Amino acid sequence: MPDVVRPAPTRRRLLAGAAAAASLLATPAIVRGQPKALKIAVLLPRSGYLAPAGQGCHRGAVIAPKVLAEYGHAVELVHIDFESNVDIARTQAERAINDGAHCLVGAFDSAATTAIAQVCEPRQVPFVINIGAAPQLTESGYKFLVRNFPTGGMLINNGLQLIKDLLAATKATPKTAVFIHANDTFGMAQRQGMDRVFPNAQMPFQLLESIAYDPKAQDLSVEVTRIRARSPDVVLVVTRAADAIKLVRDMVRQRFEPMGIISPGSPGLYDEEFYQALGSLADYHTYNIPWANPKAPMAQALEAAFKPEFPTFRFAVECFNVGFTFEALLVAAQAFKRAGTVDGPELMKAIKQTDIAEHVMIGGPIRFDEKGQNAGIPSAVMQNRDRKPTVVLPSAVATMAPVFPMPGWQSRT
Image (tube, rainbow, N blue to C red):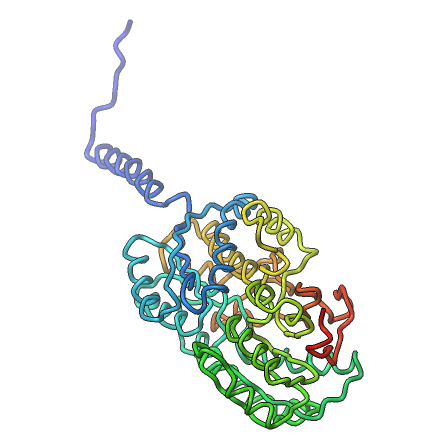
């Protein structure tokens, strides 16, 4: 075999070869450095006084990986209970980031959500809010936070307009109302929203008084006595499940029967705990909030995953907490897929560019403005009927007609 004549090595060839080798060595290192799944810490109040809602959100997080995988998204979730305690929420957020979480999701409670945001911001770790309405969350200049949930102002504006729609549909004519609300971060934010919006809302009734209460109180007998003394036609409420139960029980004990109890936008009146504790007394209360779209394919996929995982719970009751928690995880997972990196600033950039048309809750595409707020989330009029949340307005999506005034306590079966 003839000898193969090879060109003599030159300095240029040696340098080019070294550069190529370095490139080949470096490229796999970059690829190896990017995980296949996004590690998300989900911080929720799964114990303590907010546990009913926190557990509902948790159920949404538990089934999320399976449904997200059906849509081509890979996530690794770390489930964290902050025990309805703001200080623990802050500490657990720090720990989650130190343990390698690429993104945080939570936290239902506005005060805890604020604490977590204060941790994520300097660490440049994206934070996607599942539920938390305090306006300051997207008014404080956070760069590593988005919220796929209405602000308190949005809930109040939508809620008051829908009350007018409810009264028009039922031809009811209440003349007076009292507003009672929890004195926590969310409740006080709703009070501020009510103080700002109600005077110009042209409501057909007069607001006589606003009353704050401690959601950790043993009962609300003192507050109900104050309400009863005013004898309003309508009681507007911002509650959690446990204190909503106390409120109704004390109204029944004191034989106070308003035309209706209406929430312009808060949890509490639709939780499973509320139905189980009050039975027929849980029916006919009305709440104006966003809700899952039963016609959406992704909502149907979520329900299909929910039923076998949690056979003792009803998706129709849980879908608010489950749906918004799932959507927060969807936002993070979809952004990771587009960004192709877990680098905080790059991942956050992708989250801010979110445009998701197919999702779970009613409303248009999930998009965020320059403050990180999804400003396009509508509400519906929901009413408890046969101990089940039921859409009664708008009529285009309603499954039953609204009933107002509500039947008296003694007439319930």
